[in-house]
Image (tube, rainbow, N blue to C red; front, side, top):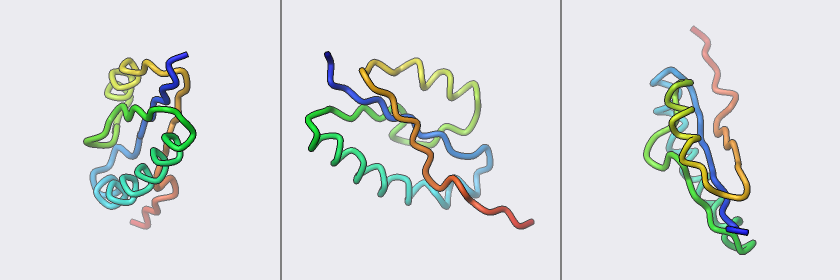
Length: 83
């Protein structure tokens, strides 16, 4: 067993929510990867530089997965849009 956990972070197709949530997502990701490491696994973030904001990009990103486990980490899921 490889003991690798792939982490996939999709967000929103809109730039404004992504810009708001991404810093929060990175903070949460740090906590998540610390727990994964503490459990003896290696965290492999599939998109560490930016959120996935579309289906085609998501498919390309998921193809990078190589771990034994897969987490679909959706930070800021309930971003309101009151326009």
